[in-house]
Structure formats: structure tokens, C-alpha cells
Length: 286
Image 1 (cartoon, helix red, strand yellow):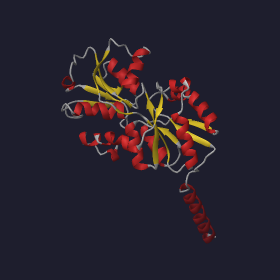
Image 2: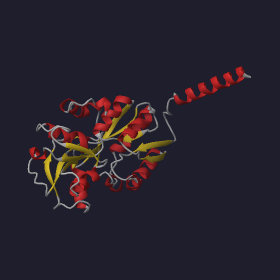
Image 3: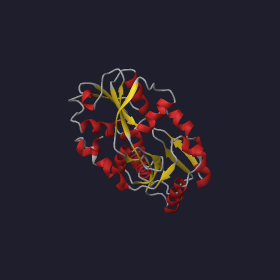
Image 4: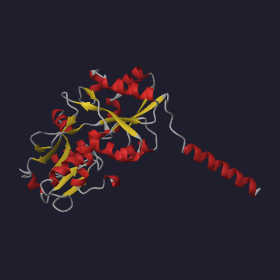
């Protein structure tokens, strides 16, 4: 009897092992498409229903939209092959690329450009008129794996000699809108986030422009990339690439506040990788 149970146990373990190590389907009937968790998940899903319908029509496949709890879980889901396409921030892409066989194929394009900027914002009543005034203050960032609401604004402070934990206190609040709200409410005197997102928050009335001001803008950085599993069927990869680069539907693009998507490659994100050295960060440990 013991031998029988032992044999069964070996069989079960073998099956589990083979299942867990099985290669993801290169041409799945349903494509799992992950979107950035930089706002409330239900809002992100709702805003991207037009994208879902568009891709289903153009690709002839069912599309499942996915919003993970944070950037790290999105990276892990891609690493384990649970996602087929993912819309990453530049830094989260760099981190995911270190762990996954993925490739960027299109980046958000605004006003004809596939680059964007971050902004350092401050509470209008905090008496901050220059980056040096942020010394000894509280600074809000979004997610630790965010480019525009962490890495870029942190590098802007570092270039002026302000390092987190030494010259100022840093706080991670999760999302771009949470950064702006924290600064507006005075929970942090300064913060960093995407310039387009900040402008949208002011335009929509979420942020009062008289209570929060832009202190500085960053230099241009490569935009958020769309990525796909490298082991998808070559014909499917080419079709996906073509479909995204030809999106002109305003309802689809509205959620991205974009006028389209342009081609990108991995080397475009070397500028993001180089920020790790400036900040003395080991990007593999973020």
C-alpha cells in the first residue's frame, strides 16, 4: 500500500511539475491584456472597454483586460506567462524585461512625440520656490516601480543634491492621482508624477490649480510602452504590432490621452536604466 501511495505521489508531483513548467500557448484564443494600475482598477477597465472591443474586432480574438494590484504583481504576472500583452511604465518595463521574455512594440504618442515629461509639484502654501527648498520636507511618490511618479522626479532632486532619507522624507502613496491629492491636502509638501496626468487632474477639477503648482519639469523620457510575450506566434506578434500602430479611433485613444502609438525598441529605454546609477539604485532589487 505504501508503494502504491508513493507511486501516486510521484505521478501527481510529476504532473504538477510539468503543468507549472508548460510553455504558454503561442496563439491563445483569449489574449490577456494588462493595463497600468495607476488609477482605480474599475475605472481603468471601464475607460478601456473601447480598446477591448477594438482589439477583439481587429485581432479576431477574445480580449480579457487585467489590472493588477500594483506594478510588482503586474511584473510577476508577466514573468510567469499569465499575461500576453502589457502596458508598462518605462521603469516597470525595464524591471519586467530583467525577469521576462518580453519585447516592446509600440509607445504612446502625444502631439506627435513618443516622449513625455514628469513634473515636481508643490503645495502652494508650503513656501517652496526652488528644488533646494524641498530639503527637510515630505515628498510623495507613486509606486516604487513607477518611472514618472518616482524614478524621474527622484532623479531631479538628486541632481540638486537632495537624496531621499537624508535631505528629505519620501512617502509612496501608490498612484499618480494620490500624489497630487497628498500635495494638495498638505500631507506632503512636494511630489512627483506624470505631467500629462497632472494636467488632466487639474483640467477635470480633481486638483485645484490654486493650491498646487508645478515647480519643475523633467527632460523628455520615452513614453509608456506596450509589450508582448516574445514567445507568441510570429504572425500574431506582427498582427498585434500592426493593429496598435494603426489605431486612430478617438474613443480608444481617449483613455490614453494620446493621438496614437509609435514604434519603439528596447534600446530606447536605456536612458531609464541609466537613472539607476544616478540614484545609486540596484534596479534588479526594486
